Image (tube, rainbow, N blue to C red; front, side, top):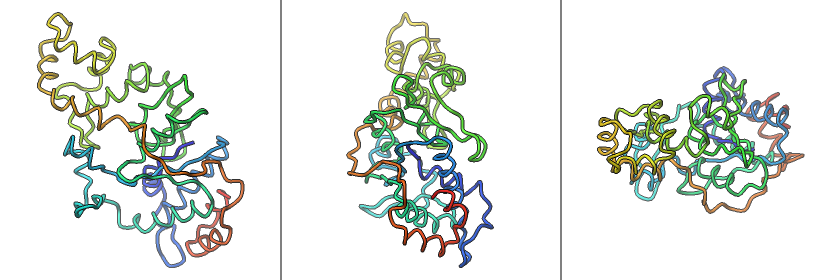
Length: 298
């Protein structure tokens, strides 16, 4: 089980009342909401391995070089040379992030992030290497591209707060998006575009049209070949729009598709059976008033 950590603690922050506070008055709604969610996942799904995947760089420079608008609207402060852009994060969430990390470390749940890469890339690499079925837990549809029935890879997608999980497999992708597999989702996403990530997409090509093009031509390469083929069934408008977007389509796959070859550090992914550092767990529980949320996780 791979957790898209930042995505999940953002969801917990907005889904749990800020009235949950530590003894010193610091909000701990994201901490407690996330711990409750992980406890529920472990109880209901019984994973043998659990990894919290992190954004060591939420807006990697190599992606921005290809598409400068990538996540640009979410930059709170541009980075100084050699640093990472600062993401816009609610003021009352910021102090909770180190607490989340400290609790996961004390409990013994693996946290993995790699400089220059997003959590999505860590998840893609771990999925590529996995010798067992994989459940990816995220509210980010971009990771639908990793769905693979043959390898037992699916996405557990929260649809109502954190309480209801959509089990996303190839059948659901066919039903909801009219595409055959996870790999096709990346092509659908880059053709359609995604304002939340600053991806422009191809003007005039929405989700339904993108799905129809993929159904006819198979993948992005097939669509691009059709543009060059005067006998293809593309309409004149589609051919023009795809031609005008040639430069974008040349770089978009590298931005939209997750990396699968990230140099990961050594770590133990096994689900811990007892806390790694009981003393730290007790201290964190007391200091931050984590109460039943941490007890349920333990």
